[in-house]
Amino acid sequence: MTGNVLGEQLTLTSFGESHGRCIGMVLDGCPSGLPLSESDLQIELDKRKPGQSIITTQRKEEDKAEILSGIFNGYTTSAPICAIIWNKDSDSRPYEVIKNTPRPGHADYPSFVKYGGFADYRGSGRFSGRLTATMVMGGAVAQKLLKYSLGVETIAYTTQIGQISCSSLSYEEAKQNRYTNEVRCPSPKIAEKMKSNIIEARKNGDSLGGIVECISVGLPIGLGEPIFSSMESDLSKALFSIPSVKAIEFGSGFSGTKLKGSQNNDEYAVSKDNKIITKTNNSGGILGGLTNGMPLVIKIGFKPASSIAIKQKTIDLVSKTECEIVVPGRHDPCVVPRAVPVVESLVSFILADHAIRCELIPPVLGDRKNEH
Image (cartoon, rainbow, N blue to C red; front, side, top):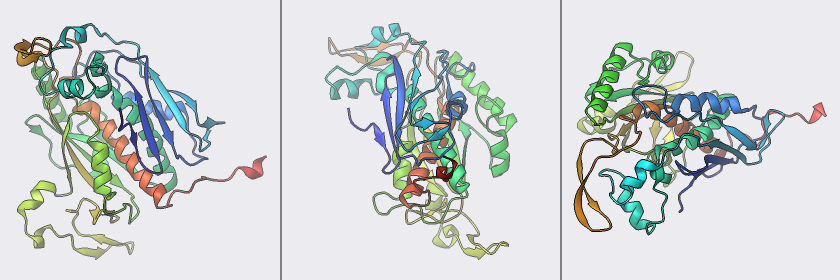
């Protein structure tokens, strides 16, 4: 199985399966001298771990990170950083029941064909949202690296669940309030409506999709490598690795297709602190595949979770006959809330990789030689 490595200079390798012994990551290319501990990973992991609320899967996993290599005396050494999470609450029995009846909307059937029936189907194996924890571990390092070296910060938050959406919020408001409720929406009143919508869907055996918005500030100008490693290209590749992602737009996105050039173009101006800025940000902070110094703005669309308790039509792969399926087990009725920290992690990872490629982050952070 290929496709398990992301990045060029900073690389993230994801390993493990949903119901295997453990899941983990290997992060290579991280500069030496970054203060780092397991608690840095744990802070981010705790934002996405399961079983925290009625609107998530009831699988109870501690998701405690163990760093096995790459850290010495509290600092990165430039050696590969390997971190694992042990799976402790997996229940594979429901998957034995449906192993020959692929779930509509899920990867069961194409993965069955691609891997000749040998793929691990327990908990969806490598196709499970559980593997996003490996992305969060790598992203936690990237977030700290960006903040420590360049002052770059990335936040994400829920803007829509089903038909319920919140209006635009200031960056500071979103930053302060996004993790104050279970759906990760910065607007408390809208968050309650979103939560009720998810609970109602779960009660009916159904699921909901939604939208996550992500903003990165403090970016230097010129991150990106056109043509095939443009900032949009690499961010899109990373974000589409999150299960259930089906749409991505930058800046004005699809709404920009309805505008004229005179309306969509971002005119230049000089700020009060004598920096060149744009009056609007319809480009979403990227021009020609390069960051332009304005905030990076991305919206990510998630489809409704495919594992639902409503009876659906499928095929018995053994008898090749039509049949019905009711998906058993523990599943998220909406993946959007737990996807918010995953989005933050992957966007941060790509930005950090490009910053290293542009030599804006050096291979050694600080100097301790004179201390010895």
